[in-house]
Image (cartoon, rainbow over all chains, first blue to last red; front, top):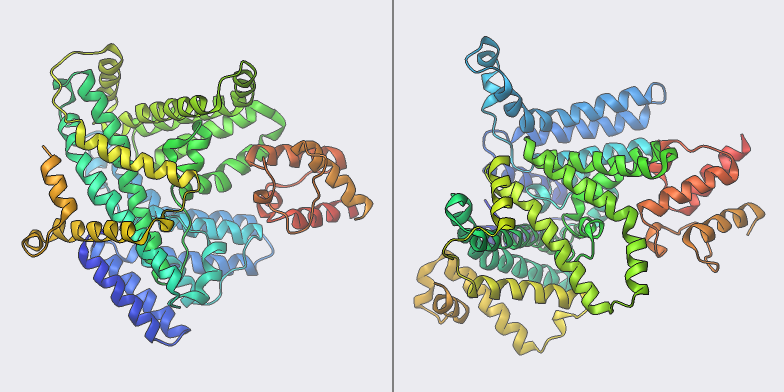
Length: 476
Length: 79
């Protein structure tokens, strides 16, 4: 069941009540595990047990690491590899199989692997498990001995399918709050869910068909359509993913748990390193702490060369994490090189621009636009059907290929403006909750009805749904 | 503050370019402006050079605050 499914909200409310009624302690923990596994099994009927396997491996691995003194390094490597193994098999085996010569005996022998479907959320809970094991190994966290507490950390349904990728030292100490109702936290949770639904259903789902129309057959379109579709795609991905994260964060709040922030106004970033500190933060900080920092530390005597190599290597891994395939590796390589360049030169460029007296506000807007443009161009690699299509699209956009413009501008531009304005207000420290009550409740009401009308079209007959009506008038 | 802690504090002041920086055991990266993953490495390397010691990757990954870094450093200097 997806978070945007209205049944999810009923389930969430039901779970919140059940947890509050159950006595704190093992029954509440057990109930959360059962709900998590049930939720996961509905999403993943074929491979639901992978979650249990990874959880059991990490639980036993943590205890083994905390008890062993001799040959601890070897044990650590074995535990990490076995915890990563399901992810590696499910994510990359089918691609590796496709490299085998078609029709050969080897290809036939391994054909089961060629058709594996990636279990939902596997990389998110695998990363949580691996991060926990590394933290136990380096002494950052004590091994969790209580299987129920460990099970809740791993199977807590809000973060299970799409993150944020949690960290044991952040989540485990909060389990005392599980199911403890707090009015302010619950309201903040509901607000996060509502904003998340708005981003997902209103913004992302409105932009998606325009992007699909162009990217399903890009060669029919000109530079303007390709540019618009590419920009729309950037905002679609952002609204979709950040919205989904907000629903996860809001759901967890309702159950007493604060998950990690996953997006912090990424499209206002002033440079690429800044962008990676604000986009999918739980993933980029995971790679920073567990891949980049140890690599850079080992290469520290090579100074800037070590730094740049560690960055490029880390970003290629981030790229390949998104999917097996050349274009993801190229995406990572491009970001690695650009982040390394920016890291090494930003201070100098900044000093120069300040010395020649470029005013702060235009500089900040210019930097945000430049960063956004670079990121958007690299997203072409994701959305295009392959590297050759992506290269063709770059050529058409930069070469100004002419053709009749078919994509609408007004509604997508309005939605994007709402998103950017919201981000600017949050970044400026403006507290949206201090708006007059009437404004806020009109907006909540509109959004709630929009959500209901979206899923139950019949609801429109019973009540005026102003936001939907406005959209129907504006939409082409 | 001991002489040892003063020497470490001088390293911090040099790396973060702030003469009034005062270190304490619970201090973390988020408590200091400009303490990111890059200045972090510079800090570690400057401490290594100043005290003529070497940290291991595992030690560096395990530091949660300045106090733990100081404890690790004290242990190395006592050997």
